[in-house]
Image (tube, rainbow, N blue to C red; front, side, top):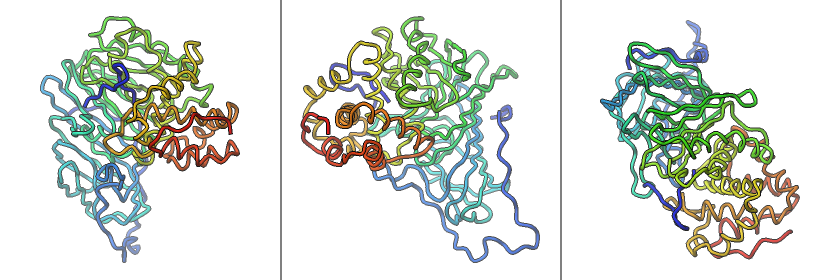
Length: 484
């Protein structure tokens, strides 16, 4: 995520008739033969947890199962601000479950089935509790299908502002970090449970509906258009997005992958379009320093809604607030969000406390891009921030920022300075091997700060605990870095 800045501060912000899914569902799990002993005999079934136990957000996500794939079909009428949807969740039980939770905020559930059989369901605030007809044994796959409808609303918190489904003048935007997905489909809403996605969005004819991954075409029927999208690489739920409205669309192909970008038609053609047009150029440079681009599509979306004062690295197709381009072409923010495709999306955090791994590396990508373009150096960027950063930056450890400082300047700027301190300490050859090795070894997985430190030590052959302790956990400004 990137934030629009003023000076040195941060500006924060606070179904009916749907076409079939573009990809077939996976085969159903094998059933127990008639007359065979029940595989659940003697098992002690219990409800799954209503959270994964994240220290910063204990209620986020759910326990007892691992999702492999979501197939989400929604129909949205902007005039009525009404959403109707069906979500198919393919998962594997990791415990013997008598019931399980899904995150779903504000929408009304009409029907739930598990493996084709009706299941009981109840709401507990923003939790959907599903009780299948029979227990789900650990290690077995199951498929839940949920039909729902209602008027979607964003989630609001005093500390983090709002995220999720936002009704707009010409459609809607579903966007937000650290949570947003549960405002438009039932989900295990924590980045530790990544899954693949097939998404269909049906909207009034004439509107564009953009989501993640590879475009799978669109079809018209009865005054409505269904847009199909598929993300075949594992994706954290907060990286899913929907953008609906009147957009100027540009398509193409790069290195055999589709390119799909969209800019709000309310914006005059200019800097935003020019910046999106350079997406693949920026991605190619980042590929040279981070390793192969990790996804099957490229693109970006520029929205014109004053509530979106940030850019978010939604997988394969980042979403940018229009304010980033009011001063002219801005490839720096494009570099930031595209860097997240490696660091944050392909390599995802295991817990929210480690968000500096996403933002520090993406901030450093901006400095590398400037160095590549000849408009600055990473050393100069480091020197400027090291000299002028406020005491709050040094008093907030990036690896332990606390929930209230999750998107603080320390996480971004001191996080970027930490990356540069590592570069200085180990030298360029080892530093760039570290970045490529991290991206390769943790591709499509989740990771922690401790794992990053261990990998940096292994690749560089140097002991780095004291460096990372000072830059990530100390509450005083560390000495300027030097070669070890």
